[in-house]
Image 1 (tube, helix red, strand yellow):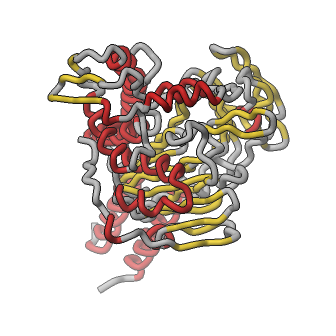
Image 2 (cartoon, rainbow over the protein chains, first blue to last red):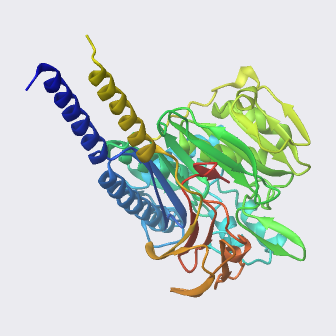
Length: 362
Length: 120
C-alpha cells in the first residue's frame, strides 16, 4: 500500500469511528416529567444526557414530596397533624424531628414579616375551607372569624427548648401552607444535586427552584398574567434561584359575585385586598415562598419595608388596578411580554435591609 | 504536502460531520401529540391530528379528553369548580389541563416551547 493510500484509509477510519461515537453517545436534552405530588401538579425538567439519571431523579423527587406532604400537612394524620394535637393541649412534648426545623424557621420568618406570615392561624385557614383542594365557600360569619382573631394565636406562643415544645396559647394550629412548599422544593432539589443533577427546574404548583442551565442558554420562565391565562413577563434564571408567585387567582371560591381567595390577612381574618399578585426571585425557596405571601398581604404601601426586612431584593407586585411595582433589581430581570399600564420602580429602604437574620434551611 | 486525494478526504470529512450534526442536533417538529397521565402513569399518547375522545377513570370519576383540530381539551371532569375544563383547548406545546381530584394530567407535547417552566 502506498503512503498516500495509507493516509486516506487512516483518515476514513478516523471519520468512521468519530461518526460511530457521535451516533452512540446520547446528546444532552431536557427530560420533562409531570406528576401529582405535594397536593399539586409537579413538573421536573432535567437537562442531562443520562436518561437513567433523569428517571431516577423523577422517582426520587416524587417520593420526597409525597413524604413531606404527608408529614407537614396540618390537617392529615402525619407529624404536623400530631404536633397540632399536642400544641392544643398546652402541655410540653417532644417535637417530631421531621417538623421541628420547619417550625423554628417559620418562627423567624413570621417575626421578619411583622406577623403578616402567621402560620399559627391554622384555625382561620380551616374556617375558610382553604385547607381543602377545592374550597367551596360560602365565607364564614364575621363572628366566627373574630372569635379566632380574639385568641390571637402567633408563632411567639410556640415555645421551643431543644426538642421540647409547648404552646402557651391553645388556639395555635400550625398550617405551613405558605412556607412548606418552598422548604420542600429546597430540600428536594438538594437531594437531586446529591444524585448528580446539575441542571434542573423543579416546579410545584407554579412555584419553582432552578439550578444550572440547559446548555448554552439560561432557563426561561414565563410569569403568568393575573388577568388572564397569558404570560405577562419572562424571567431568565441565573444559577441557583427560586421564583415564587402568590396570586389571588390560585385558590379561591366565588360567592355572590365576589372572589374570595386563599391569601388571608391575619390582621382582618379576610382575604387580603388590593393586590393581584406578587413575584419574588431569591436563592432560598423557603424564604421566597413566605415573602410572596407576606408581600401580597403587605400591599402596595408596605411591601418595600417587609421585603427589606426579609432581605428580598427582587420583587414585582401587581395591584388590583394593574399597576406594576418593582424593585430596581427586579426591573433588570423582567422582560414584559405585554406592556403594563403603569410601572413604578421602588427602591427598598436601606436602613432596614437584612435586619432580620433568617438563614436558609439546612 | 496535501494531495488532491487528501483534500477530497478532508472535504468529505467536513461534509460528513456537518451532515451528522444537522441530523442529530436540528430542532424538532412542532407539537403534535397529547399525553394523558392518570395516577402518575402515562395512559395515552395520541396524535393531535386525529379527532377522537377518550374517557379516563380516576378516583373521583371520569375525565373526558377530546382531541380535535390539532388541539386537545379536558371536556369533562368530576372537579366541582371546573378547573380542568377552564384550561380550554391546549394548542401550544407545554399547555396542560389538570384534574387534581381525579389525578389526571392532560398535556400537549412538542419539542419547541417558548418557556421551560411557568410561574404562577
